[in-house]
Image (cartoon, rainbow over all chains, first blue to last red; front, side, top):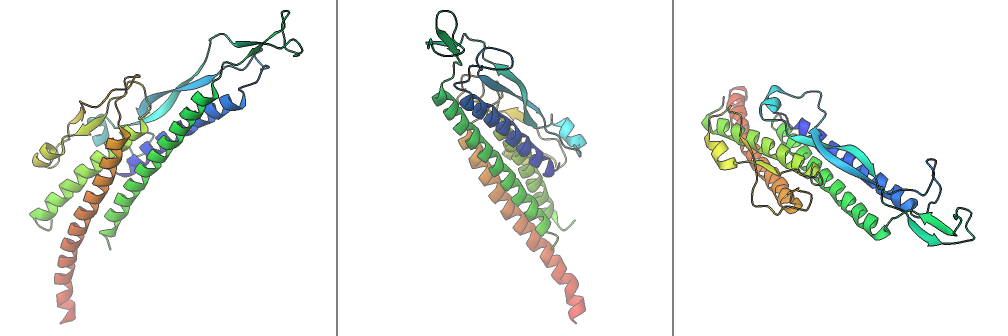
Amino acid sequence: MSLFSVLSIGASGMAAQRTRAEILVENLANAETTRTPEGGPYRRKDVVFESAPAESPFASLLDNQMQAPEGVSVSQVITDTSAPERRYLPGHPDADANGYVAFPRINPAEDMVDLMDAARSYEANIASIGAVKDMIERSLDLLR
Amino acid sequence: MLDPVAGKLEHYMDLLSIRQKLVASNIANADTPGYQTRDIDFQSEYLTEIGETPQVREVSGLPVKNDGNNVSLDRESRLLAENDLRFQVASSLLHSQIHQVQLAIDVDKAS
């Protein structure tokens, strides 16, 4: 049983939340983007988390016996497939024959709230790393 | 090694670190759909034989969110702080035990 492997669980949480924040920032930045390499307007993306064994090079036998406590990872990035929002802008270069332009269906408020949630979860993982670090330091103090 | 109390303290610290690991895992999975909060029954694990693998169980009675996840960050932060403090107490006690042995060794040098 090693406290050091707990650090990698916290780190996996931080990495996953950071990826989520990156995707959310991308959504916010592209809220008005009408052109993408794939063609058409930008589509909102979101992450799906799944629990996964935390990467630890020193995973012990005991960990396997007690069904290793799990870290988290991003299993996939999903793209919103709902129909884009159509706005009547006849002068726009991307307007169709009827004068409508397809805009991404992104609600900035929704993404901002998710972004705050990601930031708080990131902090929670930092707190758990801090607490475990404290415990490791205490154990090391026994040697003094 | 030192005396039975030191052995108990070691067991106690072992269990605390296992529990802290589960807490960290719960926090990391706070946004994972379908994830269930995990914990050990501290009291009964403490009374079992030293060296036995603790039983990890899923915690019931927590409010379940829409995605089937029932991690409560409030519960986990509380446990995180509590485990940390308990560990500090145990390590201070163990430290004083070791210090006593050290003193006994040093008595010979002093005379």
